[in-house]
Image 1 (cartoon, rainbow, N blue to C red):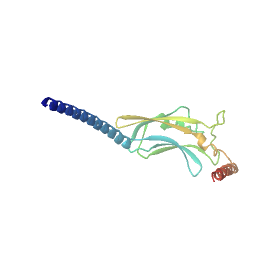
Image 2: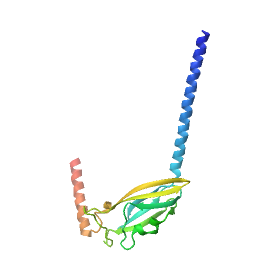
Image 3: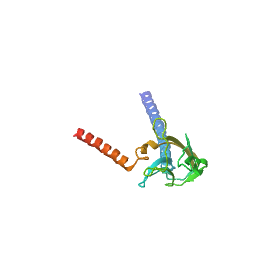
Image 4: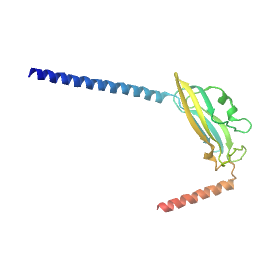
Length: 186
């Protein structure tokens, strides 16, 4: 009977040691995730997007939406950005040299004016405006980050170089389509 008690105690000790090892592993994984989460919350995030303003101007905007400084920022594009007409974005200092962006700091590049047609955005053989893949790499606290952003000028294609009367026709057509959709849902 004494042997049975010793065997039971040995098995219980083994189960206890196994459970302790599992708990230690889970705690280690939680600490790793906590460190990753803290880094994700405090790191820089540099993104690129198109911004259409109320004046009808469209800008390519590069912005640090993160909480720390993005250092040694480098931007490249899969193709040359040939806007505006007389000083291409791809030829600008920012696209040729590394720079720094503070949190919430942004840099705007004028692309075109939707109301005047003063800048001619070129279409390809399919009638589409250019789509750019921007690669943005940057550093912070000895970490290197890389973001890929798609800049699609087709987002504003219905407004580029249209006369006001053409825009109104487009809006009326869209409203008719919405009316039909809403009518069909009821």
